[in-house]
Image (tube, rainbow, N blue to C red; front, side):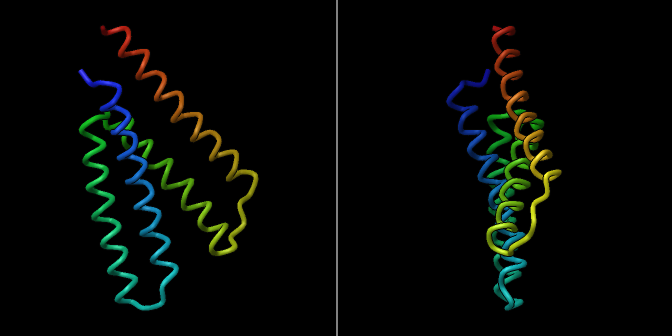
Length: 118
């Protein structure tokens, strides 16, 4: 049985994994030196996998994967807008909102499922 504290740490690890994945993408675009670019991409991806594996210790694979994906998607989109001047359309914001709602529903449904099993 997973505790709430353990689950909270699992979500923190999943968010960290998503941020590391976004940092890998950002570093691939941001740096011109091939050595720096590939070194950072490898470092962030290895770190991302470590964080993701730690999130799987506290969450279901669905919860960890969806949280990781949502964080990566949102942070990559916002970084593109803030750092590279990319446009974010209304469709992007609608999709981002649906992803956030989906993660929220998934989180709440896992809490309700846990209450029913106790």
